[in-house]
Image (cartoon, rainbow, N blue to C red):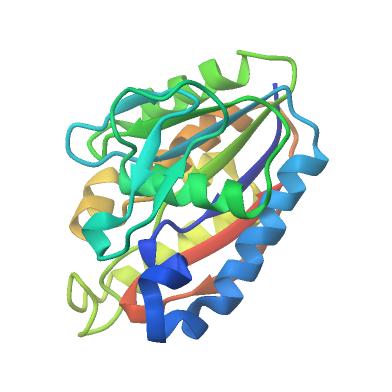
Length: 235
């Protein structure tokens, strides 16, 4: 059963080493992420799943001990997802950010496993996956990574799209109130057009939380660089 969840954005810019001179611009987001991950530890889960959008060839399960690298972002930094044997596929960027957040929090709680979800995964399939995760142990927690739209300004990665603000507002409301129905109602096609990589991971969370009776709090909401970033805690 799902007992807690933390929702964070997943830009590599969360890492100060990647952001370099721009690092202070995301200090508030980093602080909120730290608070959300801390609440996961307080829930004392038996198992923690780190769920994020998949990169090319990265879809599926990534076991404990899997490694990720930020070399592609100009930084000689490797991360490891929990404790486990080395090997397996490299972590996609989203799960590498999740591994960094857990390392930063000195995670020493439940065993960790990663799950990378393809952007094309239908809402019903995301929800089914979430239900399976929630049923895998008596006390399950999720660290869910994903960004909102990338079309909030003319300088955004996807340029300005007038629909982006409304999409992000709906996502923020759902994440901040643990509204699973509203998350599942997010339109996959629109999310793709707006380059909102968090849609599928959020819908996995929605499936996992069905019937759990969790409350949500929105800890951070902003759109630096024209991309929607949200941090939320469910417990």
